[in-house]
Each structure stands twice: as structure tokens, then as C-alpha cells.
Length: 593
Image (tube, rainbow, N blue to C red):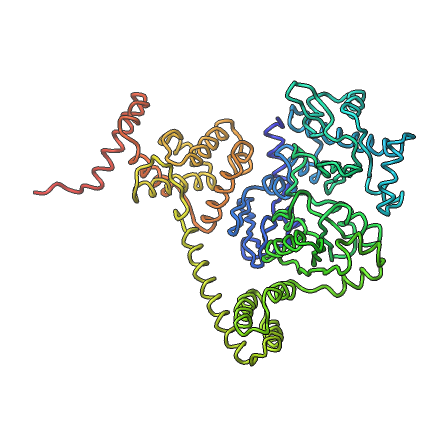
């Protein structure tokens, strides 16, 4: 592991506001900084950075932590890799370390790079199979320059060709299996996953090969196979060709359905084409696109599956600040086919005439009804108004209401009256939801008690005292000895707070700084996020010695006397009994005459 002192120095040199500002546009608000959360789609800022505690918390999605947690989340890294990134940013050389996971990650990336090189060499070999594979790529209209740019290749139809090559380069069986390029059969034999397929490597934002997609040359099934998720590849967080697209000066990105569409568009000069890795677009990929794109054009296939994917993607972009439009591809099933049939200029004309999200949705609704029938016109108006009552400007509502009135031969004033009523209803609903959300986020409102906890206000009070105690000790570590003498982690009601409290005590015992960064090294991400929330709630609250004593009193009252006394030394028991006597004198007052 990386030495604790080194991590402390990395954190000390990595001001959280500066680090977050390189990813998120922050606005200074008093003692805090706010911005749009990079971990979920939102239009109203709920992401807050707290310089005094060097922490962040999002009140929208619950993400929180220290600067290391932020880098881990934003770059999809493990703990050690995040420390390395921050160390490099701070100009610190890495110390000697015993990091098995980090070494394996580096080796898997090296395996993938060597495999990509091997597949490319096999594509250009002087064999009949290689010539067939080259003919496939060229038959798809790709130039040699495009093939080189995307590192396209061919995997021989052999169960062990890649394995033998990797072994000759010094890679172990464990590393090959960890890469997902090899599998072990039920009989225990290791074999190549990709065989007899044209290969497309997938790169991360830093240009590392993290996975592959393979397609058969004929009609065998399955036609496509992809790398499984590995230590370096999480398909829900990766975007194909984003490593190339991010270098473009354009902020209008083209989101395609498949790798071939993306490659074809790049060859035609549309250098912001990307595709989701996996079967469908995810919220993580939408957030990732939002870091580079101001506008995204959905460019899916024109078949039914493509239309369903379009509708689903529009839903994912609904709360994103990114402008979304939809491309209709007439006379072709996908962008690749359209460009081959009609050329680059015609495709660019299509791009410049794309329908925005609301126009696309209204058109889809319109297709469901026969407007010659009065009943269908009524249903169409109702459904269209529900769409227009969403997040549109008054001007947009005015324009689309006029278009709806013309389509249905209904007076615009009547359409506007219905639309205004729908907008008021939507606002009331949104306000109620916001109020419910605020209630659940009030102190103690979101405490999840264990199933065997005693019920009622007593248990909630104890749980809240545990949370407040940990928050107070994080704010003022000098009070940890006071707490250590009176409270034990094993007597805590909340499991996550018990772990956090125990970690605090251990870090303090070791003589380290017991801050959020130190705890994040050993605690689960969810617990670190909870601690960040507690620090955020108490940011403007002065938590001192009297508060800690009050929380400790509350916890002591909840612990069975036999449990406490049984674990005490004679001296501790005498001190404890004296505290109880003093407390009783304070509360009972003078004896009656």
C-alpha cells in the first residue's frame, strides 16, 4: 500500500476546489462553491464544495467525499490510481509501493495494447484469412488510413493464437484471464475469446486500450461479441471514439448506435461521432458526454429498435444541460448506409436540419392518432399538452400550441387554456416532490435503522446522536480522546457509523490526521458519502465539547448497564459511577422537606 504520510501530503497539495474546478464550473457562494453535479444530470446546481473541510457533497444524487473520492468517481479509478493521478498533478514522484491491484491494472492495459498490436498485424499478414478480413473492411468503404487510425484488426480462427503470442511476450495466465481476452473452459483449458473475427479496439480518454468488439466475417451467430467488464473496462462508463472526438473544436456531438457508424462518420469528416459501449446508453455516459458536448444529435438506426433507443435516450437527456436533437435518416437504415448512397454533403444538410427533442416527441405522438376522427384529435391534444407542460420556455409553449391548434383545427386560445392549466398542475406536483425531498433530507429523516433496532423515537435519537458525534469529531479531532473513553464502536446502533467511528479512533491512535481523506482509504464509498453529508449539514453549526458530551450522554443511556460495566476496568467503573451520581444530583434537585 502507499504510505499514509504520502497520501496525507498528496491531499494537502490537492486543494479540492482547484481539482473540482478543472472538471466542474463552480460559482463562489460565501464559504462554499456550487455547480452542476458531474455525477448525475441536473439543470439546477445541487453540488457543493466545502473548502474548510476539503469535502464535496451533492444534495441531488448523494455523491460525496474528499478530493480522492472525487477523482475516483470522475475518472472511474481505484483508490491507488486516484492517488497517483493527484500526485502527478501536484508534481510528486510516486513512492515505492506494494500495490497488487494497481500492478494488475497496469499489466491488463499492457496486455490489451499488445493484443491490439497483434490483431492489427494479423490483419496485414500475407495469408488468405488476412486478405479476407482486409476485404471485409475495405468492402465497408474504409480506407487504409481509417483502419490505422482506429487500430482495426483481425483475430485468427484459432483457439490459442493470441494466448501463445501473449505468453511469448511474458504475460501470465492470470493477466490474460483478467483482461477478458482469454477464458477458462469447464475442463480447465484456457482459450482465446475472439476467433475468426474482425476486431475493433475500444480506448479510454487517455488512449489506453480497455476492451474489444469482434464481428464475424460471415453470418454465424453470435454476429458480435464484446469484451466482458474487467478491472479496466466498465461498459456503462465508456464511450467509443470519445478519445478522438474530445480533440475536436466542435461542441456538437453525434451519438450513433454502432461502432461502424462512428468510424464511417469520422472518415467522412464528422470527427465528433461517438457510440455507447454496451447495449444501450446509460446515465453515466450521458454525464460523460456533458463534459465535452453542448449539443448532442441522436443518430440511431431508422428501424423500430433504433426508434425505441431514441426515445429512451431522450429520457436520459431530459435533465441534462446538453441540447438534444434527433436526426431523421430517409432512404437508409443508418448513417453509414446514407453516406455511401448520398455522400457527405447530403448528410451534413441532414445534421443542420435536425428536429429538436420536443418536435421529435410530438411527431411520434402524432403518428398514433388519426386526426380525421374527433376522438383521436382529443386524445392527441391531451397527450401533446402533457409533453408541452414540461421544461419549456413560455415562447416555446406559445409556438407549439399554435402548431397544435392548426393541426387539430382547435382554437389556439382553447389549447393555451388547457396548456396553462397543465403547467400549473405540473408545478404543484414538482413543489410537493421538492417538499418531500427536503423532509427526507432533514437531520434524521433519512436514517436507516437496522431491522433489529428498538423502535420509536428512542432509536432515531440514538442513531442521530451517533451521526452527530462522528461529524463533531471530524470537525474537531482534539475531542476524540474524550469520546474514546466513553463510547465503543461495538455499541453503536448504525453499522456505517460504527465503522466510521472505529476508523477515526484508529487513525488518531496512529498519530495521523483523522480527516475525511484518511477515513476514505478504508471505508466503503457509501459511508464516505454519508460522512460528507453530515459535514455538509453541520458546515455552519458550531460543534464543540458540550455538544460531544451531550451526544455521548445520549449513547451511554442507550447501552445496557451490564454491557458497559462488564467491559470496564475497576478505575473506569468507579469514574463511570461517579459521573452517574453527579448527573443524578443535577437532575433531581434538593430533597423535599
